[in-house]
Image 1 (tube, rainbow, N blue to C red):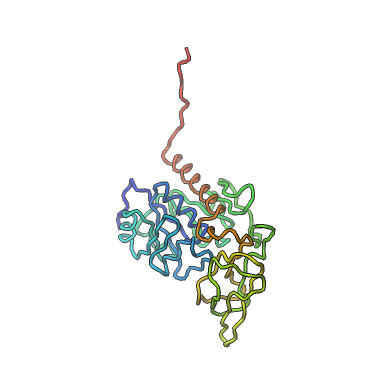
Image 2: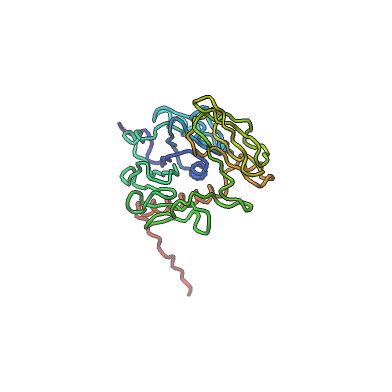
Length: 290
């Protein structure tokens, strides 16, 4: 099928619509790129108020001044893009690539492993975080580990390996993230933005045998993220995120510093490879100093 995306409109496909991916999507959209987001049927974003993946459930999602709308075809995607929004499609296997070749493809799933992205999917391919090797399965990688290299573009090699430990905020690291104590369905008793106290029950897991296993706050602070109510989880599944800084309420609804930094790396990578693809050469300007 011939693509309906005009050559002057540089379509970028982003795999994943979680909070880090949304930072990238937002920056690309702000810079004038057309963006199509590919998601799974049941996204499991924790920071839901800053994740465009929520459009899969609700038909639309808004993060800051960007609106994303769920679509079911390339024609619908193009209509949404023409109206100035971002398109979100359920297509975890990237079947849409049989209909269109994007200007660039960004794997922002952050699964800590490659879930099928290859360099032949687009002339520009970028992978975020561990699981990718620049020059082999993608053209470039972007570092997602907090620290001096956060957002760094990697031309050769891979980002740092996953440590399974969240970045430290106000002295807290692994305590900030809560994992499900059992398999079952999450039933929330608190919502994102609530202030919670350590050991306070914030949800229960309704197990298949009828038992309700309590989920307790691991520290006192701001409930910055929680998986959707009634979401089925396995034991050990990430379900909540607590920020010990109680004054950070507004940040529950704003793209994080980490997401913006990673997004900068993605934009840099796309512009860098785009310039090479176009054969652009920066020529030194010569001035008559006589």
